[in-house]
Length: 437
Ligand code: PLP
Image (cartoon, rainbow, N blue to C red; front, side, top):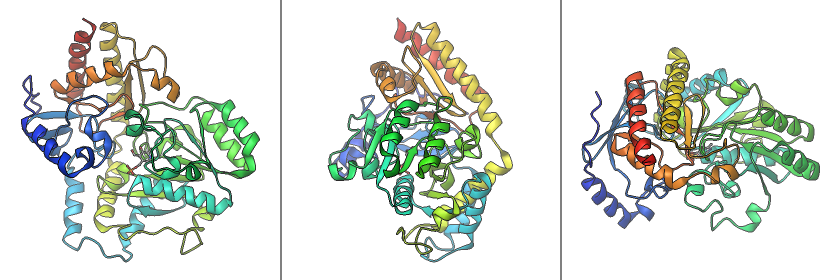
């Protein structure tokens, strides 16, 4: 049952909690996007979550369109995931020694994503991309890395250059503290620009260790790859001996069971995963071609390790999540509901006379306040961000919890019913209609 907050909704406790958090943590949060900097105002503090809903500490209920920024594809507190964690926790929280469940999870992942022949479990998406880059450099003996502006790969020094997500929203795509030396081996190109990619390979071909990219970008809002772009990246890497890394931390098990690589039919050499694969617990994965992965220590010489890697709680949650996805395959349902939502949001913006684009791949979606399709970071940057902030707070007052930036994709779960989608669309008509007036 959904009961939208009363208007204006009470934020008293959240605001006090935020003021207190600011005394202890920089900006009051442990990850910058959570501070609502891109939309203004103070963040809501969450007490609990259940299925498609979030409940804040003032007792307000929201339909959640973030899902912890992607992981909660089967809804919050799914009974099977909760039971798996409960069973695991009673047996101890960390051993620092191998368990059978690590292989069980690895087998499920390799089955879903055939390009991953071998893999390593780590603790976050950032660790996964950082390790994949090191492996690409170690295996090729080359230094240079190509990334694309507006793509975010976590807070890895060498990748925190023209980064998307909160780095973009907060205006620091190039973080202080990343030295010139570190970033000098990172080449930044515009997403979807095949000509730029070709001329970069023509100039640096034999110095390039890898390309890392989001095969569907979620971190400048949802930007799908244009036909031929992923193909060009694949062909250029194959020809020059560079490693193609698909960062599927966001898209893995989200846009399809086999990730974006299965949707577009392009096989990367390495893949990074996170978010869904840990069932809501801290987990990242990097994996790919066996011959490449065998460079990782102790099989090979590229060093990478982790005290809590393959943690028994995280692997229990991950296995439960992967089994659920395999057995219940929510993707057809998610696609149906995504289409319903996309059409509804677009109709609402059209009725309000607001120029917009709804871009989506599966259940990843962004309503851009833009007159033209958004295919690159340059175009994303031209969107009407103030309008997004107004939309965001209007929807929040109607009980719809959206991403707090124009540059973040929304996500939903298999627990979001058609009725909740219709409720969301009705709210968008009211909110966008008022913005037009
Ligand atoms: N790669 C992508 C595509 C992401 O979206 C993110 C996080 O949002 C990361 C890497 C970093 O993952 P984490 O936040 O788990 O370090």
